[in-house]
Image 1 (cartoon, rainbow, N blue to C red):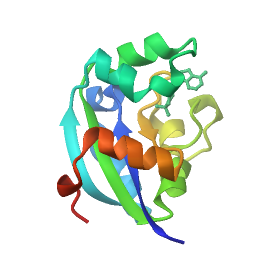
Image 2: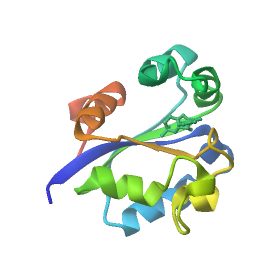
Image 3: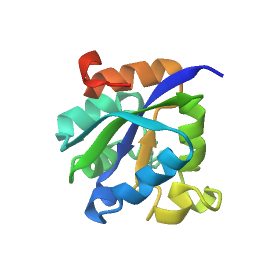
Image 4: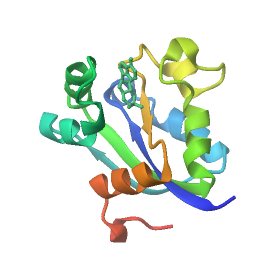
Length: 140
Ligand code: CMP
């Protein structure tokens, strides 16, 4: 399997509860390496741009309000098959459907406050990484 990079976001419900270290421990234990990381607060406009693919969905407005409601930690994870591995560790989008032991099963409050975001394909990963980081900020 190829070495990949994926974008990970620890959402405002994770920073509010001070559980970013617990979440990152799970990524690192699974062999993923944090090769870039920035704690930031996205504006509503940035959230709308980042999630533009969902702009017709009924949850879009709430999603953008939530993502701009507090600090997030944006990071690039690197490793073998990182995109799928990251998604497997996160669990299903809806925490009620997430498998035991996954981050969303363990920590998420609801489908909206679902603690983490991860890129869903190689194309999306490249785009989402560019949204937050310059190539020189990623140090493998
Ligand atoms: P995320 O992986 O960040 O991608 C889009 C987010 O929209 C998703 O996680 C959820 O937090 C949120 N969301 C809210 N309702 C839904 C829904 N019905 N389907 C998918 N995503 C949803």
